Amino acid sequence: MPEDTRHPLKLLILGGTGEAMELARALEDDARYDPVYSVAGRTSNPRLPDLRCRTGGFGGVPGLVEWIRAEGTHIIIDATHPFAARISANAAAAADQAGCKLLALRRPAWTPEPEDHWRSVPHMAAAAQALGDTPKRVLLTIGQLELAAFCQAPQHHYITRSVELPETRPPHCLCLTQRGPFQLEDELTLLREHHIDTLVTKNSGGEATQAKLQAARQCGVEVIMVERPLLPRANHETATPQAALALLHQFSAGR
Ligand SMILES: NC(=O)c1ccc[n+]([C@@H]2O[C@H](COP(=O)([O-])OP(=O)(O)OC[C@H]3O[C@@H](n4cnc5c(N)ncnc54)[C@H](OP(=O)(O)O)[C@@H]3O)[C@@H](O)[C@H]2O)c1
Image 1: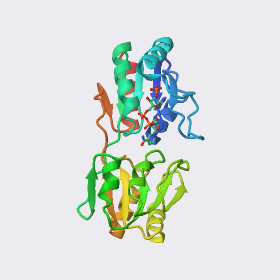
Image 2 (image 1 turned 60 degrees about the horizontal axis):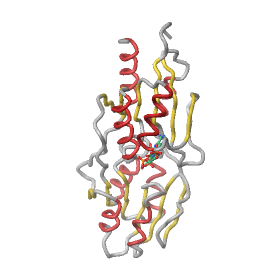
Image 3 (image 1 turned 120 degrees about the vertical axis):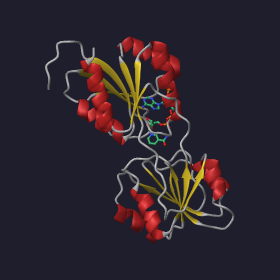
Image 4 (image 1 turned 120 degrees about the horizontal axis):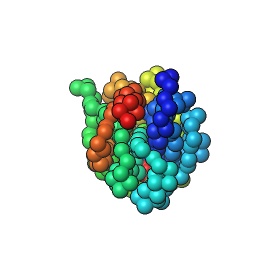
């Protein structure tokens, strides 16, 4: 590790994704940085790095600005999930107001292969509607918070997979609690055992949960793909933790 006598760069990592963890772990024991890793506190047993960590919302943009100013944060790293639109918008506004850098770590969206049967929809209500009237056997890999939309389509049989058990769920529903990454063989078994004909998923991107798309392709399962919300542009955007780390090193060296 290069010796550096300057004050370390103070970082706020907005986490909750595998990429955020990978970046955070790469910063452990690096004296050039003084990072804080932040999670929303949605899951009861979140994965956390060996860094200073905090849990829970900041209280909107004003709370985040106050927190950044109190800490003297130099760079906010928005490494949240691509569907976590509110915190990304807050991070952009707060960085602007507090005059600190914003680095967004955004994994690319998935795109269909020629053999895929995908239908893209803009939100969860549209996904429930796209299932149609004829009863289907549907795998929902959309997390536990947005299942209510499928209560409007009770004619289908659902299998849900999420990290925590959902509070609200549609009727005729079997809930599985599992945390990725998932392997292709397991995804094939899941689709076959439950005779799934339709998969509803968010276009999260990334490798940890993409095996289900490969399994759907192999089994001829239709995919209803909920596309990403619009996220604010950041001055600095990278697609991988490695690229984010390289950029941080540039910032650190250029001070
Ligand atoms: N949405 C998904 O599909 C999904 C999937 C996997 C993981 N996650 C992770 O779960 C977390 C919450 O997701 P969400 O969809 O509820 O986000 P969201 O709708 O964008 O955020 C809602 C509120 O939760 C708080 N929050 C969100 N992320 C935070 C963080 N990293 N640290 C501190 N506070 C945070 C903020 O509260 P205040 O306004 O009070 O600051 C924010 O306004 C994110 O960290 C995200 O990366 C989300």
